[in-house]
Image (cartoon, rainbow, N blue to C red; front, side, top):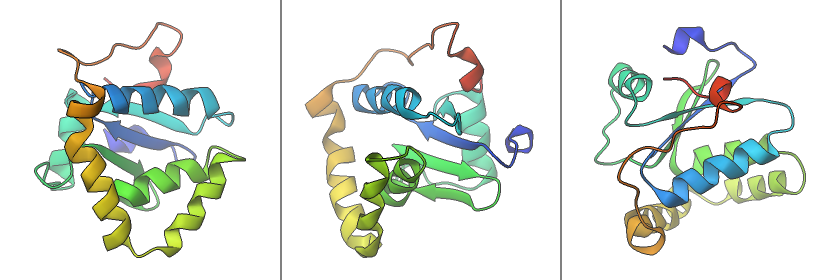
Length: 139
């Protein structure tokens, strides 16, 4: 699956039933002016294949992953900040937080991730993109 991603694309794997994650994906789509990102839900066949191939423990990381052909998988706060880097100004200013040690950034990230269903809700099934957006999603 990851072999089909060209070097100029980045794949965001997200929790397809999480309202916060789905809203975040829609935000990225709206601000991805250079058409850098592709998407797939963690629960999709493509998502499960990538998780298995990269031996990702979903008990420890279950909300966002960023795959790039040159760097492989990044997760949690680093993934979120790397995504922001490619969204242009002013979102790319968020990368200043990369100077904070990952164990601190990920503590905040994990706290939000642990409470995301309680705070933002959960869908019964994965979000299905509109026909116009279908080309941005791996099945």
